[in-house]
Length: 177
Image (cartoon, rainbow, N blue to C red):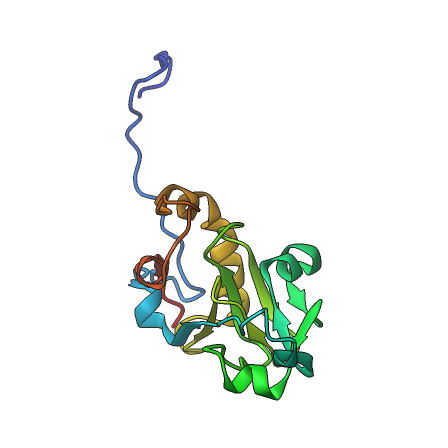
């Protein structure tokens, strides 16, 4: 576009690519992307002890549900329900460490939290621990929050729309190195 020319809606404007430079004037390297599956140390879902067995519920382990995630937001510091040692041993749940990023795959798809305490979860929740040299926990939290709209478009339909671990592993993210 030359001085004095009018720009009309829908016309392309030619301009050089915007590239930021480092303090010494050299360009920053291109950003690499990776899949979430490649950028994490571990990614697994929890499990639910048989609800009809009252001995499986008690005060030994926090048991985080999606409801806990939606009511507490970014940091989970307690859970409405707790399970007993017997419930832990007789279910497919997993004890996630403090700092694990939680991601809802069922019902409230795309809800994200970070554990502030060690806890177990239902099978509707993935516990994700990133490789810190690739993704920080906070970056992963905000990336998954940002990705929610896209995740909702990717969910599988059935009696309940949901995601699965394989779909989440294939989310693409920028590497932080």
